[in-house]
Length: 68
Image 1: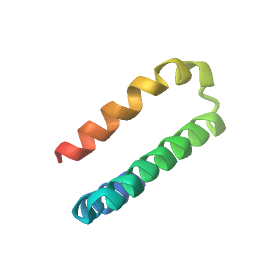
Image 2: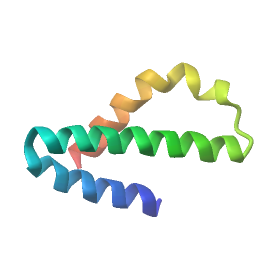
Image 3: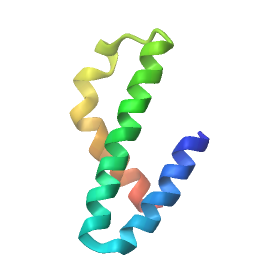
Image 4: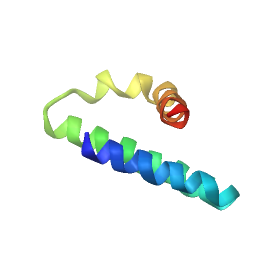
């Protein structure tokens, strides 16, 4: 949870940096998603339970965090 809070704080700061900031924050969310997938794998949660939703989940995550 602390990681997500930190990413959100950095995301809010990057929104003030214009187009370059948006590109960096997109990369940040990609990295967060990859990290989350890796941790799920290490805990034994099957990849198949995540993969079909992956393209739809990332924009939802970005919209949710962007609203805050």
